[in-house]
Image (cartoon, rainbow, N blue to C red; front, side, top):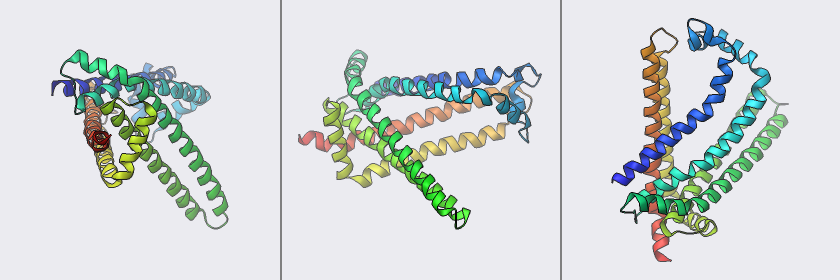
Length: 277
């Protein structure tokens, strides 16, 4: 149990740190506009009407493209780096969980290379699916504009929603393949075959487990957004910022726990296939 707690805590801490790293260029860009020189500070960005927010966005418009490019590169690097806590979490949740902390991290490190390969393949597949469906949606919308714009917009949104489901499906397959990789110490091609076999063998169990975790995580985010709005950091009071910070950490912890429950389910779904080999 203590190794599972340690793995969850590590995943939570490193994901939080990655979020701070990703957010820092945006924070620095906003600060460069000089908004922090006002007595109200960046609370002005949250005032009703959004006038100051629009002005800051206008001032940063020329830097948007370089900022997005830097964020994409940084996000890719961090996504691959976060495979390490992902591997530790999977090893801690597996049926052959190590008895010592040294064994936990040692076994997790041996699983990092194939897990990085699976993560890379997943990112490529998700990106290709999104680009293809976005291009298809744009073309379909343009073809339907001659009728009425509302049906065209609805079709566009529906195709993009389908793309989101495809991306989530690739994510579920990645987790199943990663679970197989950890349970039987498989290379990435064999792990991918085992993960696909588990998906085809019990698609209902896979998507219900993955969907339940995704819905629970989304509920955590939605609740956090509602409570953040209620706290209203635009009003005076440093305690509001502290409470919002604590709330954001609670949301991140909730998402980490949802992820851990799904990964435990994924390990169980690939277990019958692994035992039969």
